[in-house]
Length: 284
Image (cartoon, rainbow, N blue to C red; front, side, top):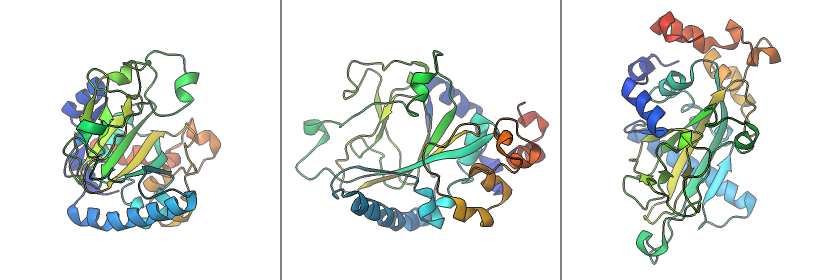
């Protein structure tokens, strides 16, 4: 794993903001040259997906399990500026359990945020997990890192929309999931930035009134005992990955029991953190 990640461990300010608001924004996460490499790859994969699904070029597309579609996507799995935030918040028994790519085309020159509205649909992530678990609030279990390849530093550009603090509220804090609730906000993220957010937060995509498609890559991380949320087509990556990447892609050398009672070979991330940051950085 890239040792530069040691310079980007989660800060106490970020941890407190995550606990209070359910998300935080990171700027300047991806360098401009990497974003420029990713955009044509995203456009190619998105175009093939739209063709396969019979979708037009003018509607929002949400493609699951994109990670295996190009080698470049693998590089963001343990990106040195974001991955230390993930294990800093969830600890070491983690995996990538879900990826999805959302491309939101421009709404068109005759439409605007003021006239046509934000185009909302609030939800919490994880489907049945929210119905089958009885606690209030529900447990965190997973989080996502959303990489923005398009500038969303102003409202109306297909922004991520969230209600700060709503990760601690099971019921939607409003009357209609299509309307902005009190305290809801369009989160502004610059090109090359990212949002780290708790799966429980009430959030939504939104309409894009800018001139460029909004391209966002979502990497979902969970505890290793949770089943993947999509197909996780990653077997072709395994042979070239280091042990930590193999852990994140679902490997369990000791077998199925290793997901709930991991042995050292199942979770090399734990040893890496302990070696570089000391035993005090490892929770039981």
